[in-house]
Image 1 (cartoon, rainbow, N blue to C red):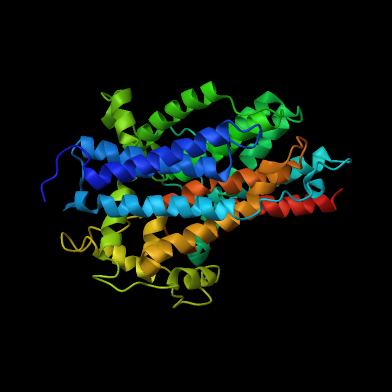
Image 2 (cartoon, helix red, strand yellow; image 1 turned 45 degrees about the vertical axis):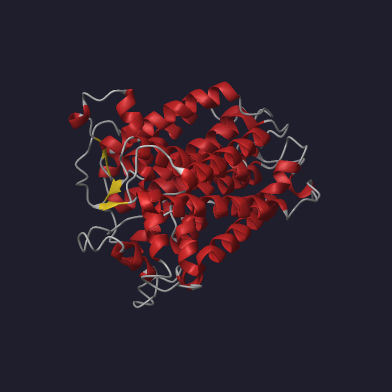
Length: 443
């Protein structure tokens, strides 16, 4: 079929559906009186959908960039847009159908005898675990990576032979993401001087940039920005949000064009690029939308639906391979790789897909709808209490947990691989809940 550089028929209807729904949810959340509405699950999901399933794909059509990894993907766009819309709708249904009755907030309130020094110690513990894990894994080169604007050699030796446990050290690095909103909270509450708070945040974000995986930067930025206002009982201001969001998007383009995983940014080959070039590069990441449509089009046709395999393998994920060498984790991702095997047998290696493509691989459209309901229900149970509360002085660890939990939707949507999502969640979100529970015992 011949395609033009304009949206057609079903494409227009689906894109408009996603766009209108996203804008409606955003306007409703941002007009809310709750100071926690910006970093709420519907807000983060709407922003993520706009980036991955609306703006990126539409720009690729207008620019004639639908050819990817040796295959024309335009014919699969409708399938991917349909998957995104169904997941979004059923997420909202699941989110709306649960937790509508606000529970008592007493257990979440800041204790009458809140020990700021205990909280500070816990935040610093997170920071040390995160920073220490990274240095143990990459060695002395980790210190050089703080200067993220100057690409390092990456040649420092690891301080320990992590072997099969290297993944756990890399996950331990995520404790730095948890520490960031805690540092902001302490500074805003005058429990930490500016020079120390700024220095700690700079090191953390510098390492996120040098490591090359943008999701840490996204989650860290969203939660830190939210905490900046929440710590003072204020809502996020719209103008700084829009301005900062645009600047952040441009920087994402800079990372896309100059990053080298674990070595920082290399500007040598991009000296002549301007803001428009980097802004265009910022949407290269949305190629996962293209791959998602292709894989969904083949599920149930060229390979059978995989059923509950992702859920079952998620249960096995925490078991180290040192104890179970033949652990069946991630074998179904071969279908993503084989989707591109007609071009080159290695063409699809490492290709990511959006979460709803994985759900479609499980049971077709039923899988997308069922998992949308489940994810929405979970976020209603965990985040609705803080959204509905009228109290301003909540336990900071409870706030951090809710912020991390909501921001994590970015990773859930952008990387459809349940076993990895579970492990990253355990190291990126759950520790905040653990420290919240510990803080209650310290009172």
